[in-house]
Structures are given as C-alpha cells and as structure tokens.
Length: 313
Image (cartoon, rainbow, N blue to C red):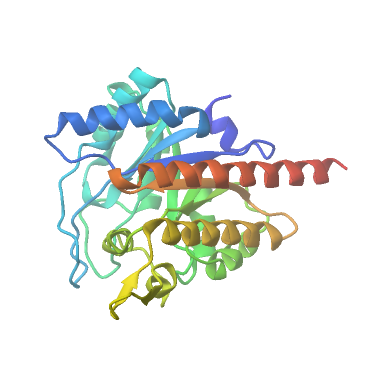
C-alpha cells in the first residue's frame, strides 16, 4: 500500500521516523544516516526529513546553527539504497517562485510527499507564498504530490487553521514534539469529523542538551520538565549530582506513553486519523529513538487495532 493510501486508511497505523539531516560536507554522516534507515526500515512507514533553517525570532538561541544536507537529495539516496518511503519538509515562505522547486522535487528527486511549512514568526515578511497559497499552486500545476503540514497544538485557532489547510489539499499534519497531553487532547477533540491524519510527535530525552536543542528548534517545553527529567540527588561529597541518562530516558519514555494513551482515551465521536512520528534529533540519541519507536509503535498499533475492532462490532 502506498503512503498516501495508508494516510487515509483508518485501519492502517502510520508511523514516521524523523531524522535531522547530517551536517553539510560530511559524507560519512550521510552514509551513517542511510545505514540507520536500513536498520529501522521495518519499524516505520516513512522517513521524515525536516528542513533546518537558521531563523532569527528576536531571541537568543543556545545552539549554533549548522548547515545541513538538503533533505530532498538525502531523501533520494535513502529511497534508492534502502527502498524506504521518504517525505521531506519544505519552508515554502522562503521561495518567491516555489513551483520550480516542486517540479524538480517530483521529476529529478522522485520525492512524492512533502510537508509544507510556513514562517516561524507572523511578525516577519517573507518572500514566498503561505502554506495555503503554495498548496493551491501545486494543485493548479497538477503536480502528483501528497501534501501535509505541521501543527502546533498550543497555538490559538489551530483547529480552524488545520481545517483550512485540509480543504486546500493537505492530508496529514505532524505535531510539534509533545511532552504532555494538555493541548493535543483539546486539538484532536476540536478536529472531530476531519478527514486527515494527525501524527503525534515524540522525541527521547536523555541529557539536558537534548532539551536545549529542542528549544532551539522552537519546541514548547513545559515548565519544570528539566527538573522532572534530570532529578538530582546528594552525592557522597555533598553537592547535587544528576541521575544517570538512562533514568531521564525512562521518564521521557513514560511521558510519551502517557500522552499517547491520554489522546486515545479522550477521542471525540468521529476523530481524525492518528499517527506516530518519532524524532531522532542527534547521533547520540539514535538508540533511544529506536527504543521509543519500538515501544510506542507497538502500543500505538494495538490502540489503532482496538479502535478498528470496536468500529466493526
């Protein structure tokens, strides 16, 4: 079954594995990325490659920007060498004439699924079209692309924004990385009756630097999450000492599992289809990301199957 058909099939669980592209000029990083995809290919329906940009939102960022390999070039190599389905993210607002890029993406790179991304700040003026305008241009040009988008559950008016984008042809949305269920439960309930798929995004956290990188990406981090994940206790010499990374990871996995269960426990009568997006944010966290993919993927698959059985009863 093709990815587009899976995305709109209520009986089919859909799981993405999101990988930040390696730094430019490091061929060994690209080779390692392809190798990693080969190792987890059976666990995910598609590899999700984000587009990392250095955008100034008017506030200090704690991580230095590192130029990354172009997602569509990496996507093409992954598909050729592993056979995996690959989707890429594209910031459409940065390109005043995006149709050339979309055509090249289809014809030269053979990428068929693209998540359209808007600007990082509504206060800035961008040269390119909005997500809605870009979707209309793709549709008017007759390009054979499956379109998706990004959703920030805490953003005001998000349900209406998703419905407008869905009407423009976007059939899936990946959430911002989730660390609690407060906003996502309300968003899913507000999307009752929507014929689209919402993929819940999670990322394993084992060290403070993981949270700092997610903050650099613009993820909303709940207050006191650092304290909860990296609980400290007195050492033999007196000063506080952080617990081992595996303790933080275990708490991170528990948060993700509780959030996933909360969403399924609070679904509206006619919910949108749900999916799973596990984010691998750095090389050190590959093994934790695979652990999260296996654990949440199994739970998510069972939840989808249970709902399908109930609908047929």
